[in-house]
Image (tube, rainbow, N blue to C red):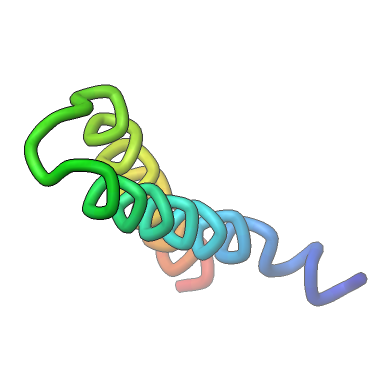
Length: 61
């Protein structure tokens, strides 16, 4: 439990990146061009995941 307490921000970031990847694969599977909502969600999840990991790295320094 101590590990999760120390690294929850990084764990959330990784989960967001995984969610973004799965959204991206769904997007590729459904249609290459359309579905702007799914594109926006993928972009948001990707940025949120990267931001969480970046904040975690900055806090650790």
